[in-house]
Length: 192
Image: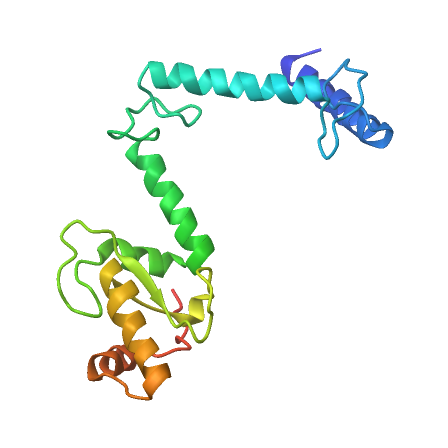
């Protein structure tokens, strides 16, 4: 039996074991006959052991001053546990999930140099993604109500205050009107 045949055989044995263990409510680890923990595929012993192994691996990587992501040999940023590559990847994932960013949106985000509301440069500050709170009132919103890339202060203080003032007193500031005219909601679709 060659190496690839052995690998296929092992996959088949493990798949059969997984089906049998799931049907009987047993631990998914080979040769373990314990009952699976509630809501888990493994028994409590194997759940705890896996958690301890992951914790030990992370501690070992911290001691060696390596990024805590498995397989990464980069040095983490000062005061962080991950390297810049993984920090950026996590932020990009969050933008995709929270703001439904497309590839075009991500490219625009990375190329942004000035605030879309006040036109001042970001100067190293991370841009905030502004959205129309009347369309989607939560932090996680659809891509149609995403407006511009702005300073955090512009988003949380200026724009939010102008919108509150408009709702409360019915008076719209000219800066807010100009901003809304540049970024209408719902946003038109951009096709690559």
